[in-house]
Length: 139
Length: 138
Image (cartoon, rainbow over all chains, first blue to last red; front, side, top):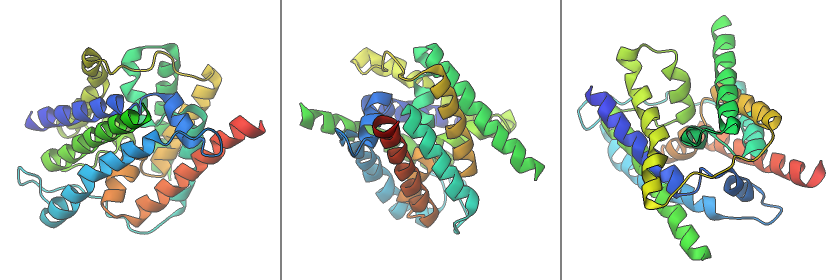
């Protein structure tokens, strides 16, 4: 129960940040990605703001302690080497992001908007995820 | 006008970073939205319930910020065909590549992970090329 409450709070703060930063607006995202056109640098400040908070707390506390504030172990990624799936996945994700201006966080944050467009995007996103999970398990 | 946009974006970004680091400090988990979403469906409620709680917060947050005047866009641009193709690519790509803008971009870069640095560079470059091709070539 405690885990659910803390995760809910983290999700609320994360979602509020996505909305206030205008990261939820696909047109804003596409304008940021359009570096050869009328480039809008705003979203670089979003990344800057997020790293300003996460990086120092991670480096000075989490990396050393490797424990949560409740003294439970942190689940940190162990992979270090580059591999084919990482590179191919990043390319495919970039194409999808560039076509729509929507990455997973802002996509979900837009759900309450309730339009057909966002519902279609999220269903397609889940189908893409499930397909890869199935393919991985089949291997 | 421009400066206030940048300040608002930076503050919003700080909130994103705060939400992400809270999930690490409280739950010991990387705030990777694609990973959390995919795993929410495949792990049992007893261990995976925190994922649904986090996603619930993410989804209802805009309803709360709307009270302060920060709203969702009224329209999602793009045809249903484009959005379907894009959705499948984002879903499949983030699973194959083990992360998206949040997991690789924010958490991974902060952890100084080489894999995340490369992944972030590649998906940014790929997205920039895609936007340029759509806007200036086709």
